[in-house]
Image 1: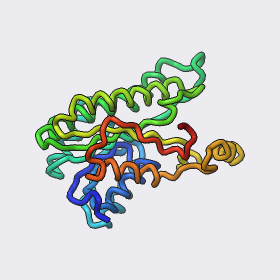
Image 2: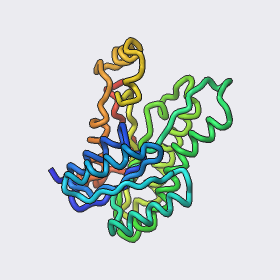
Image 3: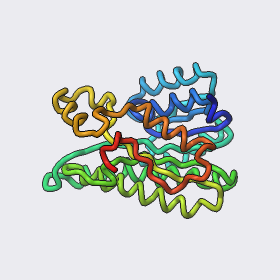
Length: 248
């Protein structure tokens, strides 16, 4: 359909799961796609080739978005290579689940750095270019857990709640420059991570969702296409939930 034709997007953590689905959808819609990976080198290289088959420019970068200087260098490299940066999707994230009484300082800091600090790093780095362009769409992937909390995920929930506050603040600061900032909050999305779980447990989660199924990564990607496109030109500072009504 070409909803993103002529736009350049940078997607962090795109070698698998939701990030990979976003990268593919963006390429299908005509965007040139830069993306990052860290540990999944082979998957990152394979994705670059797959995206290029859509006739767009694609390049993968092995980069750690939670490292301030690395994120700054990454954005500079993308702008040098692609000539612009129109859409930034912060998708990189991890979990280190445990009950609070057993959670280590390391587990807390690691989740905060990779999930939350990475958003600050990349947005700050992209800010200069988007302000000069007087346009840009920032999309931060949060979670329903960041809205409602979850036992055993105090670190993850705090990081995802922080993303929501950060997203709204950026929208208020940069709106006058034509830059939009929104968050997407997935619910239970079935990815490679859920495939290794006990089927009975997964089915129990599905049954608890009003739509009686888990979401697909592509359904989260569709929301990101909308927010990256001109169809959402007057939408900013919002949290769009993609969760089958599990949280209303």
